[in-house]
Amino acid sequence: MPHLTHTLQGHDLGFLKMVASLWGVDIQAQNLRTALPQLVQALLDPEVVDEMVASLPQSAQQAIQELLVHQGRLPWAVFSRKYGDIRTFGPARRDREQPHLNPTSVAEILWYRALIGKAFLNLPPEPQEYAYIPEDLAGLLPLSAEPPPAAPGQAAQPQDYAHLLPVSDRILDDACTLLAALRMGLDETHAASHLQLPVADLKALLAAAGLLDEEGKPLPEQVRAFLEADRPAALLQLVQVWLSSVAFNELRLLPDLIMEGEWRNDPLQTRQRVLQMLKSLPAETWWDLNAFIAAVKQEQPDFQRPAGDYDSWFIRRRRDGGMQMPLVESLRTSVGIHPFDVMPRSMIRVFVPYERCGPSE
Image (cartoon, rainbow, N blue to C red; front, side, top):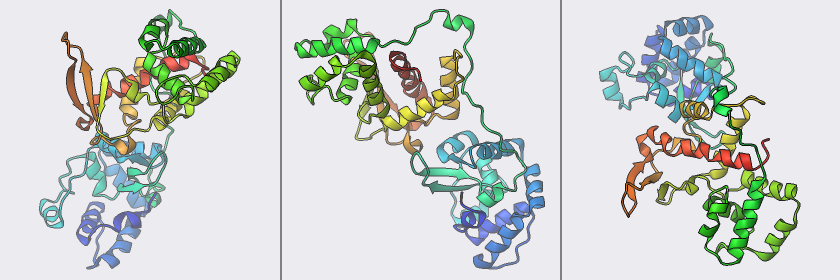
């Protein structure tokens, strides 16, 4: 993480004096070059840091704790949604309105005390804007960086798993059925009633596995090798394709949504994130799917949007509405978290059938 000096370098002398006043530090310097090292030295005094943190409201201490739990940083989209944003001021308006004395959010409380910075950081999975605690300051904070809860959600109740649906390799039978239908030139909808997975999903997976050409027709040699393979090898082939494919796009296969515009999502990155969350669940324990989804909504709602992008994704939700023509309701993801109940919730649920069709580990 950037250090305190780097965090403050982009600010003017007026901002530094605001920070200094909140810390009870007297800066006599009349220029930025001299004031900056004086302020940094004063702020990195362990006793002064203890006093500052103790004076913070509980909500601000909670924000610091959460940042420490996540290695001193959180994507700005995640942090600001929970702790508020920072108003933008020009120097004259800022000096006139004194926002450091009248903060409107937890983020502003921390910002005007230089307890957090805001910067684009080139960190996996992609570069994005982060809220962070300056690294040299983080080491002096008296709060403990306890590890986050290992598993999102909660264990299922016995009545929730009274009827078990065992893992199977039924997907191989479905693949054979669909390939035969396509080879005979039949409309793929004729096979739909015989398949466990939706036709569009299975066809997309077979295409990603290199078994179909660009027109969706079976490739004879590739299909022959697939059908002649023993069941474990054929299943492994499909599982590996699903795990590593950038062509198989679960989001664009959701039947009730219409994607508009030229924006693109990253299905592989999304898949890896969801699987990583699933791996955190305890072994040999039935888990409540609804509770898991609710926990993801609370903690990682941006798991499929690069850098918390809410402005470029345009999605419409299709509803029947009892009409011949589909009733289409506009859904713009820039409204924030509310679209989670339409899109990411469905995205998480879509992984369950695939896990049931293949290995559980």
